[in-house]
Each structure stands twice: as structure tokens, then as C-alpha cells.
Amino acid sequence: MHGLAARARHPPSRTAPGPRCRAVPQRHRPRRRSAGAAAAAGAAAAAAAPPPAGLDLAKCAALKAWVAGHCSPWPAQLEPELLGPSGEHRMLAGAPIAEGQVLLQIPAKLFLTAESAARSGLCGQLVRGAALNEWAALLLHLLCERAAGADSFWAPYIAVLGDQSHHPLLWSSELQGQLTGSPMLRVLTDRLAQVQEDTELLIAAGANELEVARRWQQEAHSPLVTPASVAWAAAIVLGRSFQLDMGEPDMPLEADMSYYGTWQPRSEWVLALVPWADMLRHSSEADEAAMLAFDPEACAAVAVAHTAYAPSAEVFDSHGPGLSPSDLLLDHGCVREDSAANARYDAVLGEHLKPRGARNAALLSALEALTGGPPALVLTPAGPDVTCLAALRAGLASDAELIKAGWRGGAGAAPPGGRSGGGGDVALCARVMGRLSSPASLATERRVLGVLANAVAAAAAAYQTSAEADAAELAQLLQAQPGAGGGGVLRVGVLRALLAEKAALAGCGDVVSRWSAALEQLAAQGPPSAVTPEQLAALYGLDGDEA
Image (cartoon, rainbow, N blue to C red; front, side, top):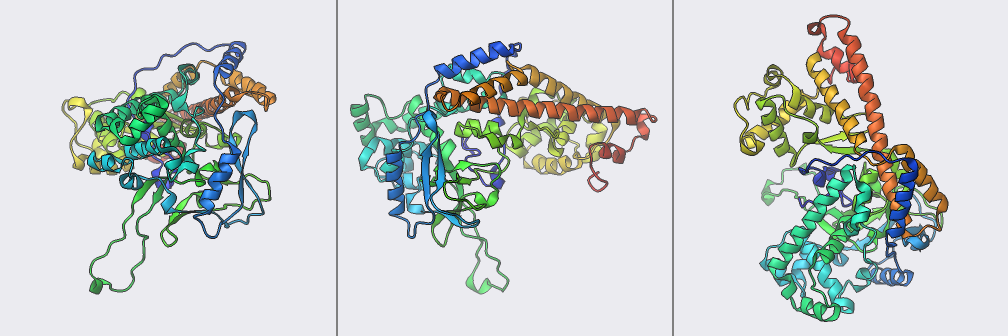
């Protein structure tokens, strides 16, 4: 999967960390600033930030008319509304909407996909000839349709996309600096590097030699493909696209169908821009039923209401389950106030864990191959989950414990690059990690909790400001709304994301402290060898079956 393509309104099966799983250099950890200094710096950043482009209501009306012209019947009355000078938008119910009612039914012929890029008269020959991947094809497709202007089939849609200046991929270095100390800065840095790679890929493929690119050069006095234009396109695909299963549906075949030959249902996930559907904002309260899905019978993307809406109420969809404020800020450039329920701090395990020995290193290497990237250390207010604890045990368990769990490889020197063997190691790793989901010894659990405590402390110390300073600044900005400019809105989103990360760290730290205290109480009752795995499992709240 492309590094930028993760979490773009994905279904539950596509919520892997993605861009968060890349190696990064050691972060600088500046000292905290006082609340007064933090508020002053935040105000300066807000003043310096350009206001988001927002949406023009006349253009929205033209888009609606264009989409409605291809939909029969028009499912539900939805009306766009601008939210003050920030340019942020929302969709309101123009009439009562019942729970389960169809909100949107957008025909597939309106989608922008890699397939429509390959068919395009503007860039299709290049897309096919250069065998561009799905992500690069969609970026080029967008750029070419924008360059075509009114001649583009998608002109009403392109017209509402704006300049995306609110999206982190288009932020100035000053705005990016607001993320210092947060793992969000690492993700953003990786994504910007990917934008540069995509730019070089498209230029090398000959994108700037296309006929539409030459016309764009004459009119805009700029090449079609530049780092800035690719960042614009990437911001749109990252923030507005959907992963749709456009394959054949699974159909239970109860009778013997061998007479008709062999048939297997297939699943084909497609990255798609779906005009009009992408104007709904995300709500953490919306469940999976509110996620856009492809209906093969209607050959359309369909969304239904997860709850009833009164006239003039805002209508939401779900961009995916469990999205944190950091996810929403980095992917979509905005964070609503209801998103704090999914507070989470995403670290890279390797930044905080040094493998105990060669066998541990080999297991972690196999785990990286299994997960498709460096294992994540996900910290929440409820503490790390079982998966994270298992990954820590993989790096900290004794050789005897790893062998007992079924991992016998890696006893010699670590292989070059830290990678172990092939698919056999990966398959075995999956089974071993399942066994390591339960604690084995007092000594290993002490090491696990020690690494967790240190990780939480180091992560909290990396921020420029305290949670108290951020909360005070956020309250000040919200009190000033709607008079605050667009930069103020961006700052509100940053503060909400930072506060959620710090809340996750604080809660996780408390949980780890309680676990450590309970572990030492257990150790005080007798020799370490007398502590059973069942007692250790109970410490984490696991029942006997899980242990």
C-alpha cells in the first residue's frame, strides 16, 4: 500500500497504521514553555496561517445539480453550509431523514479511480504505458482534470476542491512546527517525502510532456507536475477518497454448483474519489453502517443514515472506526470536538525497545514482515492493548521463554538489515505472537512495564507545551470564535489533536503505574518462581482462558 493511502475513509479491515510504520530519526525534545508563552506562540502561528480556501456555495449548488443529473431518484436533500470565515463546511438535512434512509447513491461513472485515469483521453496512454500504480494514477488524473478546466467531465467537482491550504500537506514550515514533539510530525514528514517521490515518478514518466500539461504551462505559467501540485492532489486523495469493495459479492453456494464450472467470489478494493459523498464530515458517533459502500446491483456508492436527522441538523458519515484526532487532523485537516473519545498516541516500537538478544531481534524482524512495517506501540488512556504487550514481550522475553512459545530461530548473529528469513518465519511468528499475548514470567513483565513507563515519560517530555497550557489556549480560541480567522481554526484542530495525545499518555501512564504496583505486591508474596502465569494475567485483567 502506498504510504499516503492509509485511512482514507477505510472500512474496518483497512485500519492498519500505514504511514505511522516507518523508521524515523531521533526527535529533538525541547523543554516545555510556560502557558503564557504557549498562548503567545499559538496566537502568532494562527495569525500567520492563511485561512482555508473553503467552499463557494454557488459552486456547491452546481456540483449538486451535476450529480443529481446522473442520479434517479435523488435519495435525500442535503444542503452545504459554510461555517464562518474559516471556510470549513458541513452538510445539513434539507428535510427530515429517517434512520436507515439512503443519504447518497452516487453512480460509478462519476468516480475518479485508477481505472478512469487509464481510460482518460488526457492521461490514459501515459498511465497505461508507464504502468502507474493506483495512487500515482489518481494523482495524475486529478491534475489533468484540473488543467482541462471547463472541458473536464468532472469540472463541477474540481471547482469545489479549493486550494487545500487547510491540509497539513500544504502547511508552511511554521505551521508544521506546531506538531513538534508529536508523532504527527513524523507522519507528516514521511508523507511530504512521499510527495516528493511521487513528483519525481510522474515527471520521469513524462507527465509534463502531455498535451494538457503544455496547455496548463501556457495558461498557468507553471508545470503541471510540481511538488506543490502533487501535494494538492495528494491532500485531496488522502482527505476525500474512499476504499470501496467493487468486486463480486460473496454469495453462499449451498447446492452443488460444479456443473457450472468453478467460481470464486472475488474482492477488489478500489481507491475512489466520489463527488458529493466526500462532503459529509466524520462523526465518531457514526458507526460502520454510516460508511460509504459500493452496491454492485445499483453500480453505485451508497451511504445510509446511522440515525434520524431533523431538518437543518448536520448529517454525518463515518470515515472509519476508531479514528483519533491525530488521524483526522493529518488526513482531513480538521478535528471536531466529539473526536476525543478515540484518544491515542502512536509510537514506533523500535524507538523505545532494544531487543534483549539475537533471538528477540529475529522475532521482531519477522513481526515487521508480518505487519508490513515496523511494529507500532499504540498507547491509549486504557493502556496498551494485548497486541502491544505481546510485541514488547517478543523483544524482552528470555531465550527459554521464546523457545517455549515456539520461536527457535535467531540464535546466531542478527542478519544484515535486521531481517530474518522468509515466509516460514512470518507464519511461525503469527503463532508465536499469539502465545506471547499472555505473560510468562515476573522478570519479563517487570521489563515490559519498565519499557512502557519510560516510553510514556519520554513521549510526554518531547512536547513543547503542557496539556494545561494547550487547554487554556484552546478555550481562549474557542471563546473568540467565530471572529477568529482561518489560522485560528487550524490551531484549534492542532490543539485538539495534541490534547488527545497527551490525554492518552497520561491515562496510559496511570495504568502502567497501577500494573507495576500490583506486580510488586505480587512479587512480595513469595519467590518469583512461585508467581504463576495465571496470576500475572489477572494483573492485566485477563481471564483464565486468555492466559
